[in-house]
Length: 141
Figure (tube, rainbow, N blue to C red):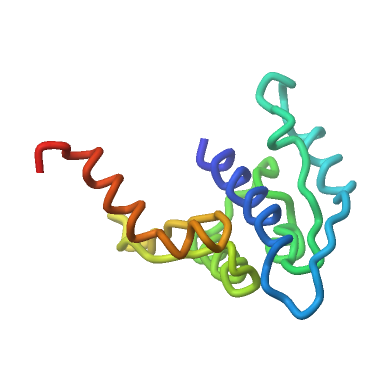
């Protein structure tokens, strides 16, 4: 489950990076080798959808396999939290459409991050969205 969520986040980050404020526009291409491995490592086709069965390759941000040296969710590979956090921070540094912040530490003392992936206009209103979410969580307050 965590691997799937991280995989979706990575895909969204790559998609978001295409509009990153750069001196030259980002280009997208098909990351054929990564896509091949996704299909190879997915045990049943119903575990995948067209939203997560591929990874676009952006010229503006490094692919996860370039940073982690394997695809996200590879069999028999568990990434260290510090490595995943470093990659998320790298995405935030490379794209204005990714924002990352710490929400504390786990019971095991590992830093926990939240990553928001959206367009720049939405990220500029992040405090407003947090306020709305807080009211939904406790409508009486």
